Image (cartoon, rainbow, N blue to C red; front, side, top):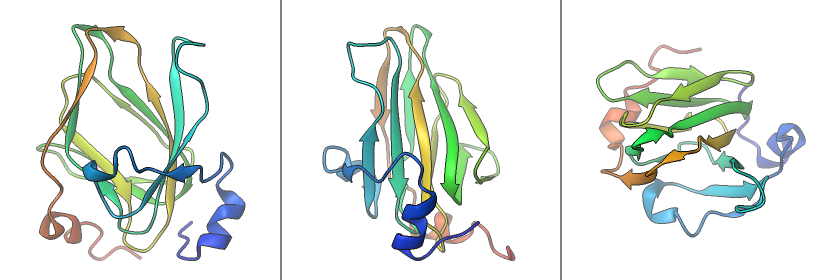
Length: 149
């Protein structure tokens, strides 16, 4: 279900909005929020609820790892997009799970007409690191969902 109203979206955003995502804002187009669900160092797996305002998306990026690694997205509220380089975009709705292997260039974010939230799971591995790449262009983003109801 799509949500343009922030207050209505807050009612279904189970894990909460969190704080403005200022640390990573330079890698996002639009407004995003981060709500860590685990504390680094207290567990081997880092989980965070990431919330995107309508039309917000992160830059293309790659989760590098010598072994293991990658990312899992668990969609929890609103509607969004996930896209791997060279592939068609995937519509994201609550309950959808995306497994992103290491070394795959991709991006994810909200649809133009909806707030969106997912839990981001950083998969443990050796030699892991994130490489932020170029922004998703407005032209590329605006092509998504044409003809969608």
